[in-house]
Length: 179
Ligand code: IMP
Ligand code: MG
Image 1 (cartoon, rainbow, N blue to C red):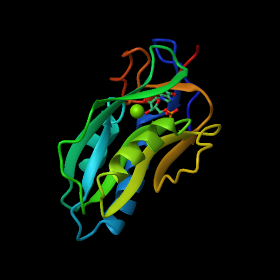
Image 2 (cartoon, helix red, strand yellow; image 1 turned 30 degrees about the vertical axis):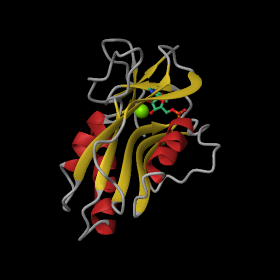
Image 3 (spheres, rainbow, N blue to C red; image 1 turned 135 degrees about the vertical axis):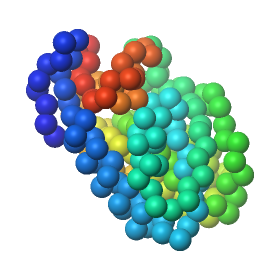
């Protein structure tokens, strides 16, 4: 992981665009190996996962179907509220399908376990997780991230789809929000 440089908005760069590109390529290579000859349903987790998913799918060599799911897990602050609510469910019938969840970041793992429960009830043939980021201090739950990009320190990251109170999603790299 590189970084340290401060941008004009005063935020420190945590992961550069170039390192994000390399990470996404590495994940796509692994998926291309494992899903060759298959047609999985990729479930993007809104909103934070939209940039990662968009970059990832353009490097996939198998025909993937895309759907989205949205849960509310965090309030406007940087701490988990602990309560989760489904804002928008799937529109695809995933029974008997290979399903891959595409998440921006897994922190406590609460969101992911909630999502996996929701998806498992719909009886997919297989269910795996691809997450761009996790935190050093996170994921105490018994969860497997099948495809993991990078582990970041316990900071609040913004950019590349990740927000703080709906700001910063459009930044091309990941930065640290000092709170
Ligand atoms: P978890 O339920 O604690 O694993 O949190 C997962 C969700 O919280 C992610 O999908 C993000 O939307 C959000 N989140 C967790 N950490 C960060 C962060 O550092 N920056 C922005 N969003 C975060
Ligand atoms: Mg998210």
